[in-house]
Length: 173
Image (cartoon, rainbow, N blue to C red):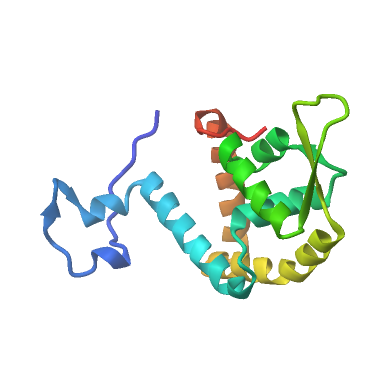
């Protein structure tokens, strides 16, 4: 098992900070992959919110709409697991998108306990309109990386997601 080496550089939050708080230095945080992934996620959500500010849209909502854009319909559980959210959170996101007229929900003909979710024509139009804003947010996130670094970053992050998927509270299906 590989160990994490302490970083010799300090991130922006550590600039000018020399003390320790609760036994952890700021430099220590910048050497923790989990902390950095969480922080990068916060930054991505902020960038996404800036680009989509006038549309009241979250990354998870856009992910669900994007998945349904390419299929005829999915049951709620399959849709939730396809984007890595738990059943309860998925149902809440779906309910909001149904209220906005972007998704439609109906009982499954084969399993009356399940709901099938489909994207509406308005949902398709919305995805088409929002795709450029989503792409701007993605591009802003990886902008500091060179083209080769971007490919390597995506390759490595996909590898980590695949290897650790089952450890999630909401594993992707």
